[in-house]
Amino acid sequence: MRLGSKLVEAGLSLIAILMCAAAVRAQGDTPVPPPVSSTGSGVGSIVGRVVLPSGHPVNGRVRITLSTIENPGMVGYTDNNGNFGFRNLREGNYTVEVTGDYKLYEPVSEQVRLMRGMQVNLTINLREKNAPSETTGRATVSAAEVDPAVPSAAQKEFDKAASLANAGNETDAIEHYKRALEIYPSYLKARNDLGVQYLKLNRLREAQEQFELAIDANPKAFNPRLNLGIVLVKQKQFSDAREHLRTADSIDSSSPAVHLYLGIVSVETDELIEAERELKKAISMGGQEYGITHYYLGVLYAKKGERETAIAELKTFLASPAGETETRRARQLLNELSKN
View 1 (cartoon, helix red, strand yellow):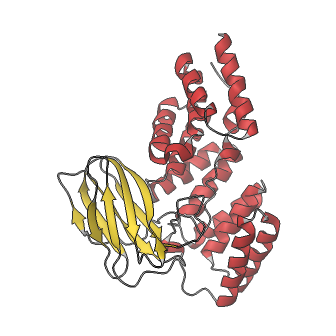
View 2 (cartoon, helix red, strand yellow):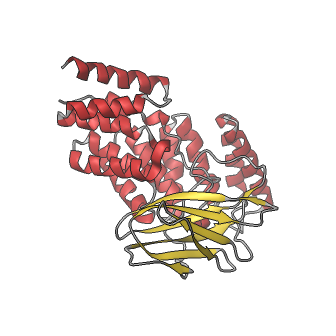
View 3 (spheres, rainbow, N blue to C red):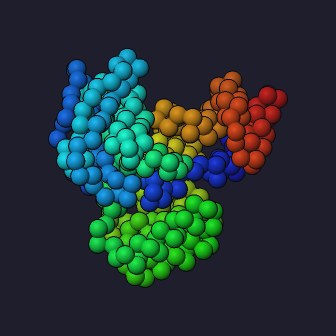
């Protein structure tokens, strides 16, 4: 059973993974810190860095707790620069909890799906008490995008832009991101986030230009690479999208967003074995936040002719809140399958 690309496109607007500066993932050029803890006979590692809410390095040691369902807690500490590492870990699901000064910061946790042979690199922002939690990326920030050379005037424009963007005012946010870049053209976070606003407004060519400029400035920057892949998917340039998404995967293989979009590309190009593998990685790593993946799995299994499995995936998708368009398309496909 072949399905038109409109069904595959339907879920794209539902994913809130447009990676902005306040909520982005670790970069491949972050130095690997020394281990502070190791357990058992393992196959992988989780390493990273804790930074302040501003994105600047912490000054002192911070408690890190690594836990699984079987093990309630392996405790370690960062070094004085915020680096931490857990090595020789078995494959499985882990929770990394960061506990800073309880008078100043809320505990912050990150869910990690560790697969065989994987090294997961994290950068985790401390969160001030009573500060609003992030809705994307679970309060992580890229150390590679923290630039201490940013002039204060550019920082002020960036902060104003970020505030407007968070309020849903993309048009005014764009103007302030532009001002920040006029003051400091090398401002990578502003460049990426300007592209994100264009992407939200479906101004795809302008978004692509900003992400490409950001990648030119730092080829190892994760978020512009992922976002460029998303733009290319929306433009149906699937070959180019796959190339950039695979590069993003090489920078941070723990990102469920990368695997989701690699899965979407593979569904579109009928590479169904790869599509199934990538989509299952996305749902395994992303959990409930990536419920949209069930929609694409439904499309995938419908293409494979696995009717009952497709119906089950679509019903799983529809059981959770979703956008109006996506829900309508999923119901349409479900009705078509149910008639056969």
